[in-house]
Image (cartoon, rainbow, N blue to C red; front, side, top):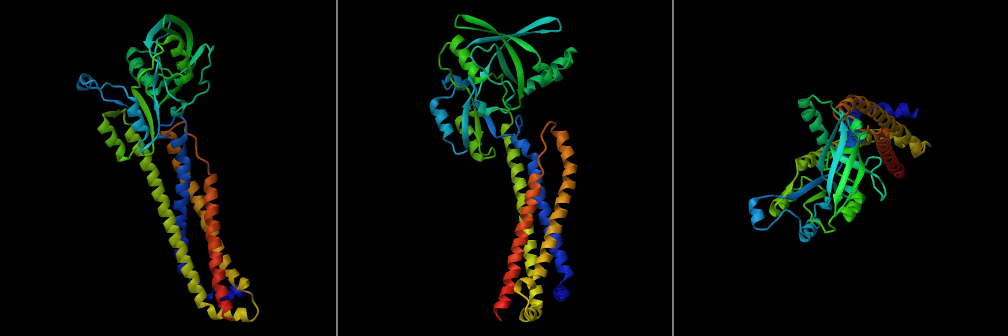
Length: 395
């Protein structure tokens, strides 16, 4: 009876405007949340080219630099100055081997051997940490990480031109290498196994613990100068990075700055879209408040009468509160359904472009939807009840 009395002044046009605006804002917010969840492995998953913002830097090599004695190694003062820069999170160095290395393997009935080199970096800077990565003294097998472009060069360049079979990562993982290490008047034969491939580091990596042990036994036991550094930065698009590199004559390998800028801009775009969704939702919520206030104002005399004949403020407010809760519930449900439909359309595309990347969870979508529904409903509940209480207090 109370609902039939109070609904007479409800404007369907106003409620429809609120419904559509809030639906649009909620969809944008939830879609932004879910899209970020789906592409987050792109930033955090091991062996991801966007997992972090890392730069590999070295000094420019020039005849003039060699003549004036500038050299290509980093001094302790330069390393300390780099670590103090505001855009730097941490700095690591490529540790070189101080001994000779050669590797051999049986390939199509023939023994193939070549000279090679080893380097190591701290595990903090690895983009892949495969099973079996590590070394303890007495271990006969050396785990090795190769750059993925080495395998691509072989498969799509060398193998194609020589009519040789192409190799997969799994096949190379089953191959045992004969590693010969010599130096400091000693030599040793060990086994090597390729346990992973890196997109970030363009070098032949072995565990840092192994390199320290081998340098101690087969190296010259002298402190090696640092010629290449790996730097984790806050924002690769920071203009101070380019300026600093140019002023100090440092070079950044490959297109790492471009990749980092892509990462940063992608995060920025997601944040802007999320902000737009929040603004639309806030404005739609404001439209609902105006509609409710206008509706309450039109029904002031009726509500005063209901309160005077014995109805409590809670009973008078309940129809409006139930109306807003029903609208918010319908908006949240439709928004989640729409996001699921859109997600199904782009997940396949992401899987095609980035095979092997884990899909994000939809748990955050439901949590965000429930949070939006709860906040909007509680806010509406409080505002409506406060307005009814104001009318009640006048009498």
